[in-house]
Image (cartoon, rainbow, N blue to C red; front, top):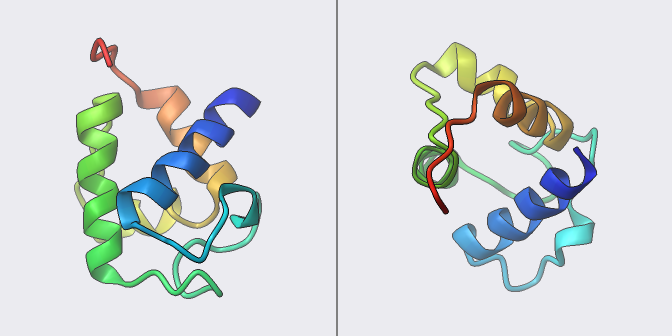
Length: 88
């Protein structure tokens, strides 16, 4: 799980082009949305597309998104439980 968490940190920074954020600055248990990261609904949409493309994971409702993006730990847990091998 630790490897996936670091991978997700890197992908979040890369996907959202967060130039002023280092991957290790993304808190493990803090909220991803509405936090000091400043993520908004468009950022969430980009992350949803990245999850589908890179992990085969689908977030198809606002309610699910609120659970999945509650924290980095929740995101990693959801990916682990729902990922599909994509060959990436």
